Image (cartoon, rainbow, N blue to C red):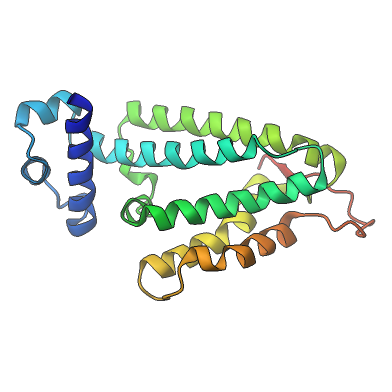
Length: 211
């Protein structure tokens, strides 16, 4: 019962935030929409900012968890496995957005909704864990030259950037074709951006490296 009430509060907050914006939404807006009592709402969350931070952090955790689960089924020691991993990143991202459009709209507001030091530390700890797992998968690709030597920020932009831009267009109603319909093209583009072609002897590879 407590978990369902907590989820009801989060769902109500998401709807309010997307309709009115985080700044304009009040705790009472969320309370009324969720049907929770004031005591119940504050039992689960410190304040409105904690609700917004929880939505963002848990959305990131859900997406990352799905991605890591799929990566575990791939072979990191082969070129095919590395290429499949790049495609998996793009496809998991696109599938998650199409399945959770309202949550994706909220996430696109950016991590600025995570403002409290306690919440920021929670997010940073989660992101560090996610990054360690991703880098562990790509280490064989780095050492064997399957991936171009790129700063991590550029690697991320080349893999996720095009899908992210398309997702924003789709969520904003500027394109009718859903993101899942173009994932094969986006996945191939991501591999062309970061992968080393088999006949590219001049490029010795290296993969994503810290900025």
